Amino acid sequence: VPAALGSDTGGSVRQPAALTGVVGVKPSYGRVSRWGLVAFASSLDCVGPLAADVRDAALLLEHIAGADEHDATALDAPVGRYVDACERGVRGLRVGVPEEYFGAGLAPEVGAAVRRALDGLASLGATLVPIGLPHTSLGVATYYVLATAEASSNLSRFDGVRFGSRVEPPRATLSTLYTRTRSEGFGEEVKRRILLGTYVLSAGHYEAYYDRALRVRSLVARDFDRAFQAVDVIATPTSPSVAPPLGWAQHSPLTRYLSDAFTLPASLAGLPALSVPCQRVAPSADTPALPCGLQLIGPRLGEATLFAAAAAWEALNPDAESRPPA
Image (cartoon, rainbow, N blue to C red; front, side, top):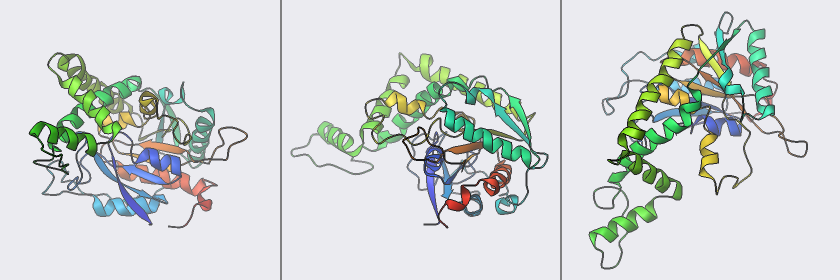
């Protein structure tokens, strides 16, 4: 297909885009209606496009953005001319480069590819500005408290009686009906997140976890607010590594959660973010070159600026011509 839709709560559009060499966009929270989307974490969920190139992603977002009477969180704000923005260029654009995204945990080959992309933007007239986002390190913990709490609440409706699929056990009591329906209807990771969310919302832990996470979320958002007083867009790696071998984190959910460290802060702040392919990199001498992504983060409703910067880099990327046509 030439384009597709995904739902991004903490990076589930941007991460797959980065690891497969396509463009993925998480719009500003409320920019696209969520009508028809199964709610996971209502304060974070966003619907966004995936496409082979920046222009196609911009075109799709133009068509799906806007107000919707079925979704009270959908913003009634003018939709930008995103396709036109792809021709704008980046001369004079101030690109923030946060040091927190280029430290421990980032694969050297991915960091080098992102740096090459930033140098490319600078060669076109953009200015690279070092910035700080000091609460970045708290993003993973904050997200996995808030998102799991909201998931626990949202997914409670899938009980086999009022909502969702239903498993009919023999001689069912209401309790066994609930238990079998939810046990067989949810995968292991969803169950894990429901349990975590139920725990942090419980009476003895609400203030220690959920309430504190809400306060930290505000600090993350303030970091971005301060940064955008000095820059127009922020550039980071999308994922700390290329796609790992199949089954790499099967026995370690924490390892998988930490791989979201670069995408989660923008989600917590409700900001638009886009992943565009960098040059492919080889993790080692005996492995093939694999895709990685440059993440661009903009101020609220600043999608047009993201498309301008992403299209400018895409035109320079020597690997862009090797992708299959849309």
